[in-house]
Length: 112
Image (cartoon, rainbow, N blue to C red):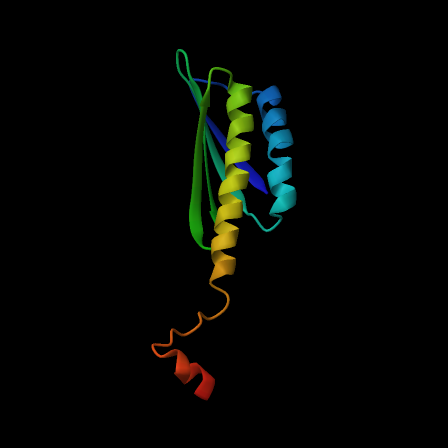
């Protein structure tokens, strides 16, 4: 999994990069076929935000997390991304089988 990071009012240091790699390792182990992640780190006066976007099974998945600490925002974004990918994975599995037909008359079902 490749993580592309960009910073708005923040420099991407080795410590931030290590924190991102360690927090998103769980996501990588759960979804090994996940390709690239785009991550935008934003630091404002009282709020640090992390926005992560990716493609998973043909659909875009995006999460946003804010906290007063950048490392807490990174951890929260990793948890949210894991939950969003699990939801997306479940929705693709739910359409795998055909839906049962609705029968107007219950006696017809016994005839079939």
